[in-house]
Amino acid sequence: LSDRLTSTFKNLRAKGRLSEADIDATIREIRRALLDADVAVPVVRQFTGAVRERALSSEVSGALNPAQQVVKVVNDELVAILGGQTRTLAFAKQPPTVIMLAGLQGAGKTTLAGKLALWLREQGHTPLLVAADLQRPNAVTQLQVVGERAGVPVHAPHPGNQGAVDVLPAGADPVAVARAGLDTARQKQHDVVIVDTAGRLGVDAELMAQASDIRDAVDPDEVLFVVDAMIGQDAVTTAQAFADGVGFTGVVLSKLDGDARGGAALSIASVTGRPIMFASTGEKLTDFEVFHPDRMASRILDMGDVLTLIEQAEKAFDAEQAEKMAGKLVAGEDFTLEDFLVQMQQLKNMGSIKKMFGMLPGMGQMREALENFDEREVDRIEAIIRSMTPGERQNPKIINGSRRSRIARGSGTTTSEINQLLERFDGAKKMMRQMAKGGGMPGGMPGMG
Ligand code: GDP
Ligand code: MG
Image (cartoon, rainbow, N blue to C red; front, side, top):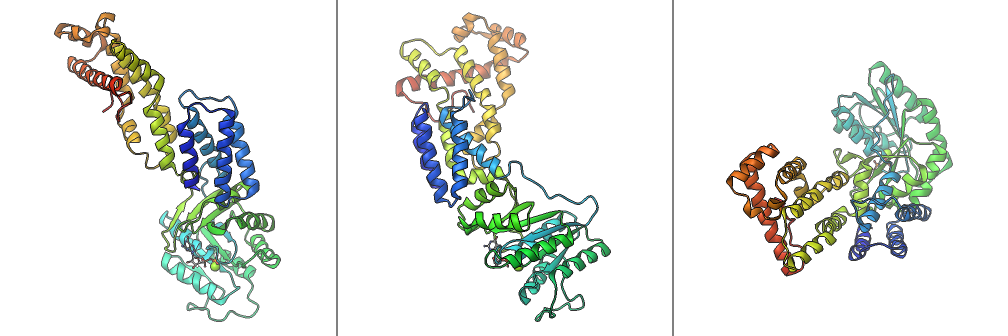
């Protein structure tokens, strides 16, 4: 998915203003990219429809050029579908909080049970794991092993039997086990109960019935649907079946460490309207994280490269302005302190972009530059330049010692700050000269650093 979108955005980058035809061409590419990523067809249709509508609508932000705007729209839509804000677990007002896990066999429920238990324990909770998967004898053993690793007790069908359960008692009832587990938690004052349940290889009426019986018996605060992120197009039917058959409050994407293409995340979240809450990213108990919709969106968009796009657009920030200045230099006019001030103010305006993309990893040089950039400094520079006479602004060479003291007093700064500003201005001016000669914007931004 990422590669595909990356090249789409590269195409966009090469263009200036976006026409409706440009947007449609871009939407076509995004549609193809999403389908390649195994996002379900109806979801793709809905997603691209929403993006198109918003890209075409007139909510034009002055801080962004058209390509950036499409990127932002795509990003925003992805985040919205993936659940918007990160959703945290809903704890019961009256403990214990009951968390039930549901999903197909092999989805990663039992592994997740251990991860979640460890994560909760580390936050000061006292979870109890309940082995309500009695489909296979070793399912109970597996949960016991996981519990031991997590340092969390396990309620299993044979309370007296601490060893491995090789043979399940005939007629062992997962609903009864779940109920007994909850009782145990109350007695022993565990504040969270995690109920592991059975799965089948495919969606199955009997399995659904069992899961909803367990649900009715323990009245969970959260039912987490655990799903293998690699299942692709099947994600939608499976998720829909569990949504209808058992119902769930949140989704856990497992096996995100593999070459999952992210499509399942988008499909499930979109079709069920349930937020993705956690991600499982490996076989170790610590391979577990709270799911962040914005980070997943960046991952899908391969932000590394999208940010390059933004970086370049920003470097050429107001290319028109830069060209005008370059033209001025060629025409023999000079880059003045007024021009310098305009540039600094533009940098200040970029603060909004910093905020917008502040959440993203690896923004690189641009991010660093923005982070080191102190907005208050622009105010100081502005105060200094405003304290100069028009003549001084046009021709800073005339600013001698006594003028420097006067400007410092007028702007509430010191003469050494005036000196610094004039030095930076000289540097920027040299850069502008180079630009005029070379015709392009050099690597850095004038006045920065
Ligand atoms: P369950 O049938 O839903 O309980 O699934 P399990 O927890 O037993 O997991 C099935 C298999 O997937 C096991 O071999 C796990 O080690 C593996 N597994 C579970 N979660 C992850 C994950 O996040 N990443 C990887 N790579 N493997 C996982
Ligand atoms: Mg299991």
